[in-house]
Image 1 (tube, helix red, strand yellow):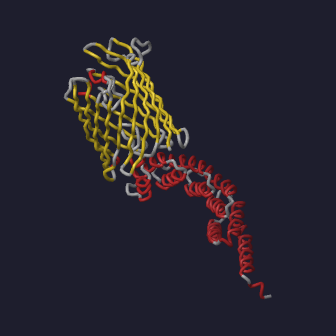
Image 2 (cartoon, helix red, strand yellow):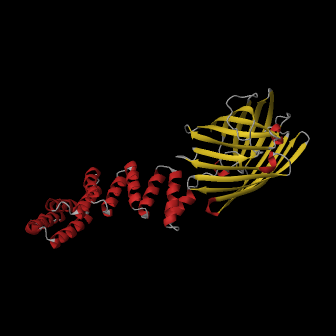
Image 3 (tube, one colour):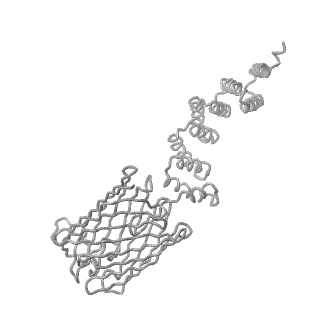
Length: 441
């Protein structure tokens, strides 16, 4: 007889008593007070793991009498979810969401089911609908951030961070994620990453330029070339050291049936967090390249994801020594990078009035991006030959796309259009294509 007093038996007796109470009140089940009391009893039972089956039975009984009592169905769905019966939980909760689209408790419960059952894509799709319906609800944005961070989609996650901070500027979770996972800062000179993200890699780059004399300064597209095309091949290797990366380049140019080579060395030493330098040297024995080039530029990160730089370039070509001053302003915004760079020189050439504006859009991975640019004048940091320095002016625009092929290889393709003023009243159209393959180690 003593065995009848064990906790298990007592729990069974309690369950029977509650069910009897339900049966006694079922004739008056439509009464609001009885339903509310029954819901409180079911909710209390649901909080106790050992009584959760009882909670399910109470919810099911109430729903047979009043199928549209949504609180019972939401509690039933949550009970199934707590018991890891996610399929049945989804069935119940979807009914409420479809029947009462504005019932946010049901929406939140269904979202939890997707999250707990690792149905990430369903959760993301459901979040998009929920955010559209409740754009100022930070709860959904935070869940979206957590899912994207879980999937390693850093660029998209940082986009969501900006939305969260627009609603709640001091949100600790969003600020912490933004600080721990920054978009890789792309150097505006070499299209390479800054020292913090640098590694070892080798790149082969090929550029083809189709040229033609034109009658106006606005003719960019060269369909039929009237001049021999230019070819440019570059072999680049990057090594990373404690102070930052060093890039070694061997350039080969074939222009107007003349060939020449150039050797360059560039580095990006880190001075402190947020501050780094660009230094570069180049040497050549041919007039197709500057015989000597030198560059020095300091980059500084600023609050709100701005970056500024100030520097100097120096070129030597036959009978000329050209000093050039350079400055830039960059801004990261969500998954975009904007940058404006200007070059100032006292020479009477296109170098004296150069500027370039770039916009880069980071895609699913920071290594993948699409870039657009427009510029005027000749940039001393481009694939510069000795002849371009004497141009009176130029206008150019273009785009490039970089794609990570796998864990070791990246591929870049680009196209550009230029119109160059070679002498007063004489213009040259230039249509070019760039291909590059990089191997990471």
